[in-house]
Amino acid sequence: MSSGKRDEPSNVPLNPSLKSEKETVYETEISSPAPIDSTSAQENEGEGWPLIWLVVTIVGVALAIYFLA
Image (cartoon, rainbow, N blue to C red; front, side, top):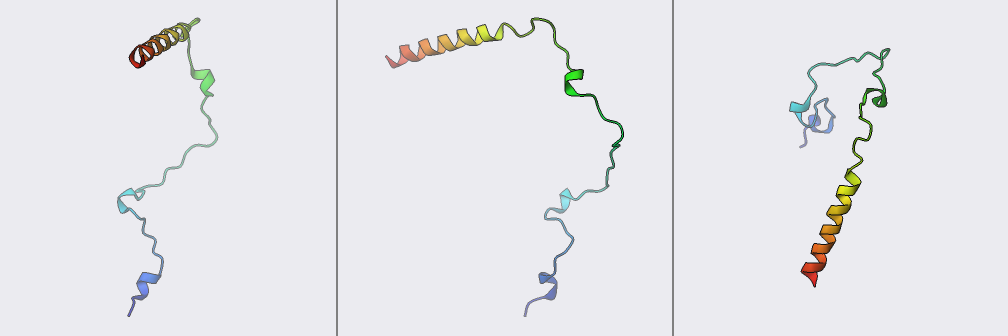
């Protein structure tokens, strides 16, 4: 009644379009630099954002109080 092929597992991926075409081997002896070594930032860069967020928060709370009152 049932086919013997159906019970046997096959080496077919669930989605054949995602099947790897080639195998890639990466070099393990050479490592890339740590992310902290490759970043750049200026002195005092980004120090204004807390003030901007404070102003935005105050305006948002003021508008919420105005519209709810």
